[in-house]
Image (cartoon, rainbow, N blue to C red):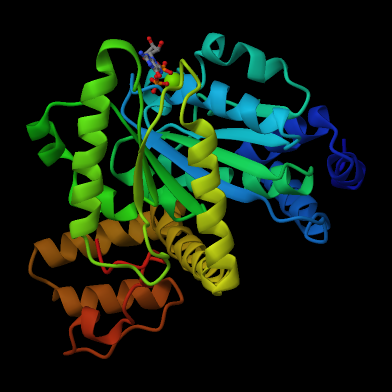
Length: 351
Ligand SMILES: Nc1nc2c(ncn2[C@@H]2O[C@H](COP(=O)(O)OP(=O)(O)O)[C@@H](O)[C@H]2O)c(=O)[nH]1
Ligand SMILES: [Mg+2]
């Protein structure tokens, strides 16, 4: 199917067309890439802005179970829900984060839900673009809520936080000292911490853990994008479907407040700028890695630097000139001449 044929089908919410389009954006073939770009261009006028929610947590914490319960609650309320995954491990394991579809059996059969597992083979660098483009496709197909699931391993969490409107961290009930193990940077990204498994024997521990996280969140520096009371920690049970409605109300309250106060659009704008700069950087780096002439030149200049024939400054200037990047004047450190990297769109300082 051509982009011209796919676009109207996506806009009318046809799930098969959406699935095909996502396959197209996942493809590494150059002609597919061109088609994908054309398609995305045809969809920019599609109505509706989805609420993009990132969901992260370590394996076993209950992400799949929660998505099943939470997703069904949302579709019952009449929402259309898309679920995407960012799984940095899938390239190695060949598996997929949403592979355990048994835990999402009902949601995956729900006509108002669309679940897309991670592709099994994808370079980490391509994951961000794939996911952002898939989000755009889901929005164009009329999905009002897009959930992006990721496993809690540093990089991928940052990536997901930088392409979503709300970032939710799912935690397990723990003993008091385990809380120390949560990286500060991850805590700082969270808009909402859900302590899952607040049921049965685990209920008291979940409640204690919730209070611990609430205390820890309170100690963090206040962010301009938060109203009073946020970020928040809430105890939920994905299995017993408890606390989910409250969590959803919190998410909506936070999103509404941010919309009213300009933070919502400002964040999206900062994210767009960030990903644009990232892609340019990535493209430049890819050229260094893939272009045979550039690789040969790098190897040659590298050998000359190693042999003492050329200074680092001269060799790098020559290389950058070859790349079409205006090189910095000799004698000045490269980092002085370069602009700072764009600040991450999240509000709480540098990570
Ligand atoms: N008691 C309890 N167990 C849960 C809950 N949510 C998930 N689990 C269990 O935790 C295990 C891991 O769940 P899963 O959704 O696969 O976690 P994921 O790896 O984060 O996707 C499974 O055995 C679930 O049944 C919950 O709310 N309460
Ligand atoms: Mg899972």
